Amino acid sequence: MKKKNRTPQYKRSRPKVEAPVDEEPAAIKNAPHTFVIRRGERCSSVSRLSRDFRRMMEPFTASNLRERRINKVKDFVHLSGFFHVSHMCVFSLSSQTLSLKIIRMPKGPTLTFKLHQYTLAKDVISNARKQFVDEECFQSAPLVILNSFSGEGKHLKLMASTFQNMFPPINLSKIKLSSLKRCVLLSYNPVSKLIDLRHYSITVVPVNLNRGVKKLVTRNIPNLGRFEDIADFVEKGHLLSESEVDDEDAHVVLAQNLKFGNLAENQSSLRLHEIGPRITMRLMKIEDDLMTGEVLYHDYIEKDALEVEAIRKKRAQQRRLKEQRKHNQEENLKKKEKDKAEHRAKTSAKQTKAGEITEQDKLLLKDAEDAVGELSDEDDREYFRKEIGDNPDEELFESAGGANRKRPFIPRGANYSLKPKKPRLDKRKQFEEDDREARQDRKRRNNEGGGKDTKGKGKFGRKGMKQDDFKGKSKYNGGGKKQKGGMKKKAGGGKKSSKRK
Image (cartoon, rainbow, N blue to C red):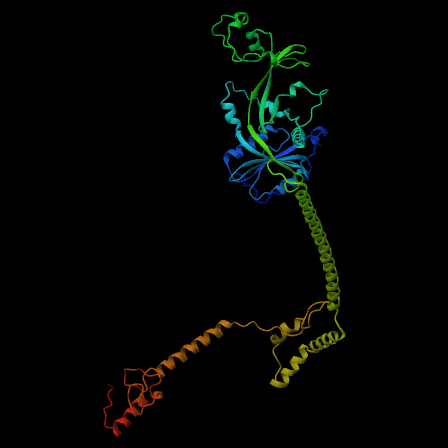
């Protein structure tokens, strides 16, 4: 078996080719786009409600937008220009209320709504008598229907224009009826001031057809168990039961041909299937700027003209102070950059000057080179003959003869010192020696001052004996020569015994 070659095989570097970027059509780029996010306390139902709201705003929304706790509203505002975002919907949950803020990017106004009731899409579909969900209907924008927004008050007109501008406009001369598969209904109650939001899916069914034919045309699978032939199913289709009854008010005449037997200039029935979510909300206030501007309308707080003027002056003063601080910061940054540039220029000039070798340094280097150059092997041999009186061995100067003893060339501007380097000391040995001496001194002091010196008694309680006599001797043996001599002298001259007490 042939062995594999162990030499590494490197991949050939191929030139990177950038993928072509297809520009979006102007209709899609200019269409209103939305961000739907949530703030405040975390709740699973509120997060589900935000996802249902995103699904309602498709396809011109970020369906898979990822948001974290560290993200702030300013982060999404900075990204809005890149993604052509025109509106941002913020669900904010606090300990008391759940609110919805609709912001016109990038400079307002901001509409704040208080949510009284809401129902998730899954609950709406599960409670429907006839469930119907078409995934293809979310590929096109929904149709907006506004009800009872024509009352008095500027806040109503602003709400109506905001809701209309959140969805792309419709051109009646170019619109295709096949693209209208969903609708969003916003109904305003002037008495309770509540707004009901509903989301429906639209289906079109032909009218004045046999029920059996209608089922075949609408691609519903019929039950042919009670019939012997398909002809019996078509002829006796009136005997079949139908869950929904056609309403005459829902009959319309189509201007274009549609699928499933809906032809132009023929009557068809429009049917709405609610797919959720349901939201009941009330307008609380309208702010001029991005969530922090002047309050243009408030639902239950009213202020007179003087208070409004005072607040306006205060906001103008705060705005001027902010602009002034910003201007000062820009000036300080420019000044710092200028100081850095000047400091850099000065340091570079000093380095060039410091890098140049002065005349005194040149003389020192020349003297050092001359001193090293004067030494040679012949001088060393002559010195050896005079001192020793014999010729030196050849091996003694072999290594020195071939080596270049001159100092290396010092380049211009090099940081070179002629002083020899200090040897590196190992201080651990010195520390160990100091510790050893300290232990010896401690031991000697313990031996010298171990006994009590009272009334002339020595270390072992004998009178007239010095502690130096027992220096380095054991406590319990007879001691050395000095100890014996001292004991004999004391024993001969005194009356007391030499034994220890």
